[in-house]
Image 1 (cartoon, helix red, strand yellow):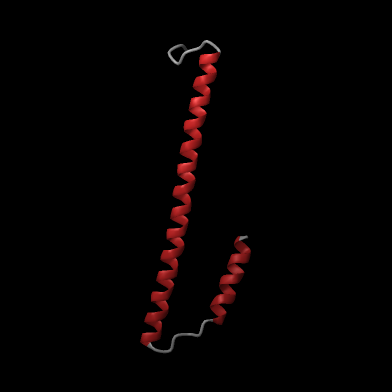
Image 2 (cartoon, one colour; image 1 turned 180 degrees about the vertical axis):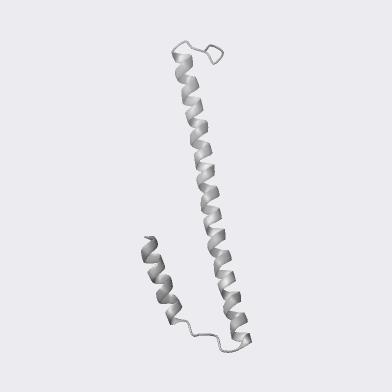
Length: 79
């Protein structure tokens, strides 16, 4: 998958004209920065979503273990 992405990036970069003036270079860099910021924000949002999902699953697992322990006649105080 990463190889396909690298190939796509190479193809995308080949289609971009080389900036000829300072203004074109400035616009090009600003566009790249905006795109990078958008990608990082998207990745950050995805990571936070996964962390929240994991937290929910951990809470559910803790509850299930507690229920099983109570059903088995064990308490958390015993070791």
